[in-house]
Length: 525
Image (cartoon, rainbow, N blue to C red):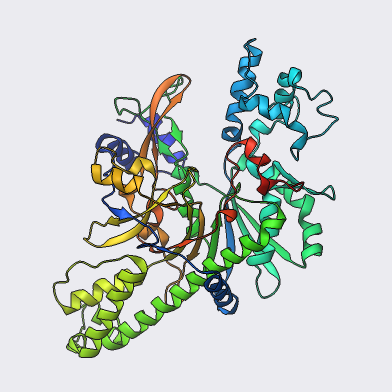
């Protein structure tokens, strides 16, 4: 399958031939469909907080002891998708075609003066008759070159005092509010592409000193890259390794699922995840911060409940006497407390844990072989990373949906699924999708330490069967691309999960440039 040249190319990327072969085999056999039990709804699967309960959860977070916290912001890639419609309009104008007045490119040109990046010196004749010039100066190196820059450094918001903020700057403002440490610092880890590092450094230097003085904060910013070793091999339509014009293998970034490796390197216990484009002007910060704190409060509250169960389980099952109890085949094992798990106390505790898992996390346990098996299964379910995911009412926006699914071990769990993971030929799956009430805006809080204060190895909790295959092209040639299990999909599949409804006002993504004309991105409304 691979030549000596291929092997050198694979290994130079930090990958292995075995990994590449495994990826080719994955193209051949595909991925299994997720077995959907039901959509997660407020009736079962989504916690809906009253205003008072949200305040109580935020207060719980404010008082909680956590071993480090940081904000994790996926910000890789250029903003080309944000300007896709504008590029299409520009191509038509260059070819001499007519452009409808209601076309995105025409709307953009008509409202150019309302965008934060508008500069009269750059656009001296901003009229509909001059649309091509406006588009070229926005998208290409004839002007701003925004079509080739990352979203994070684009000018999103202009304030009444003349201050202009990038998306990255708005994340800094948010972080000082709800992610501040006791010493007044705020930690941010931003995942970027290596070629964009200087742009982000420049964007940071433009505002860092001003914000630190204005908000009384000290920023600790780390820029991290998606490891090239996580790129996946592409194949042709016959599932053979795709070869370029130079007879080299083609590797492609494996989607946001590759960022589980970046997340796994963090030392902090509490991590907030939010995409780079999901920001709003500062008047939205009170509601944004309140519900972000509420999510963090629910996360540490869940952590404390689970830690308590694990400590009780250790005590009544005898697991606290040493590793021999859990591994009876080890040399020197003595059956200490061999009957402890048969005690009424242990049975009652297991009953309480199963009720908690079912009621709070939608986890229904499969039948255990015996008492010992029951204890071990419950301990394994409890002792996992934790995520609390904000969910907003479905308004037709793109995003993964929350579902209750059947796991391989026979249990059930809460998962975020993308449409490509749902078998549309299955009537039950279609019904579940059509009756779903919420979707995931990537507003997630994670607890990454176990009850003994150790960091989880997050790579052990990935469902490798939860990736997906997509159709792409390279220089006009069709190919298949392999995406790793998504960061908030299969990469967090084996985590303990809680879904919490958050207000729609907290979700303000900029997927296309015209989104910047919405109220959440305007200061003149």
